[in-house]
Amino acid sequence: MIQRFFELYNGEDLRAVRGVERGVFLTHEAITDRHIVTNEEVETHPFYQTLNKMGLKYFATVPICPDWRMNAGVAVQRKVGRAPYSEDELELLTMLGRHVERAFRLGAKLLDSEMSSIGLGNALNKLGMGIFVLDGLCRVTFANSAAERLLGDTHYG
Image (tube, rainbow, N blue to C red):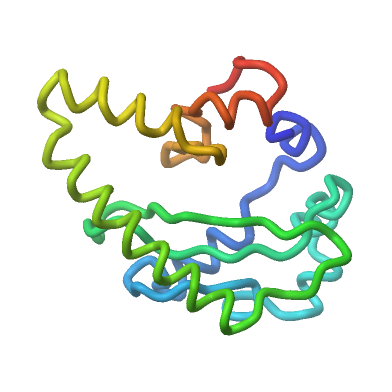
């Protein structure tokens, strides 16, 4: 699905650009489209038009990285036809983000040992949701087994 998206759209991720401009990764609160783009952009911008072709529309994200030099977050995408994310849903995502951030901190502390890399990979593979790690150019550098099933193949990066 990601590969198909980038076959259809080769511009910048408007949401990521606006999020960085507005400093959303410096907060601990979940945000959604209405916090960073206009309704008109959601309906007319080529990035959103391409999402629409993929059956997707709104997103919500919460920053999870304790290091201000990195932008990392948990993001969920809503399919076309569903309402924008509510404040209650954003509050729930914020709470989830705090748990993921704690796990992220723990993983960062353990990253130096071989045991942690094996343990973290196993833990991410046991999750029932797809986890993608992107580099600074938005290339997938890691995908757990659930994420690879979403892609349909394991050729990424």
